Length: 147
Image (cartoon, rainbow, N blue to C red; front, side, top):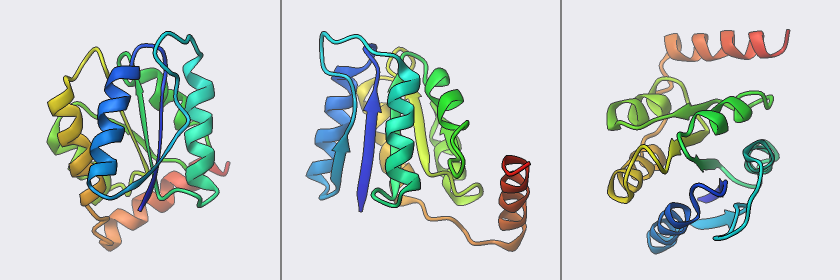
C-alpha cells in the first residue's frame, strides 16, 4: 500500500516517526510535509496529500498538525476525501470500518508518538466493512458533496 503523509510546522518530528514506522512495516510513503525548521500553511499540505489520494496515486493519507483539526477541515473540503480527526483508537477503527475514511488526521500537541503510531496502525489495518447501511450513508455524504 502507498500512503501519502503531510504535516505543518507543528509536527515534523511526529511525522518523521510515523513515516519511519510505516516504512518499517513495508508501506511506501509519499512525504509532502514540512521539514524541521520550515514554516508552512496547513491547507496547502492537506491539499497535497488529498491530491495523492483522489488521483489514486496513494490509497490512504495521513495529516498531522498541532491539533489535527485544521488539517481535517481543509481535507474535507476536497471532493472525494473523507478525513477523520482521531485521538482515540475506537474512532480510528470506526472511521475506516463504518465511514471508509481515506485520510487520518491527528494533532502533535494532542497525542504522543506511541498513540500516533497505534492510531496509524489501526487506521491502515482496518478495512471498510462493506455493510449496506454504512455504504448508504457514505453515498449520502457523497451526494452532499456533489450539491
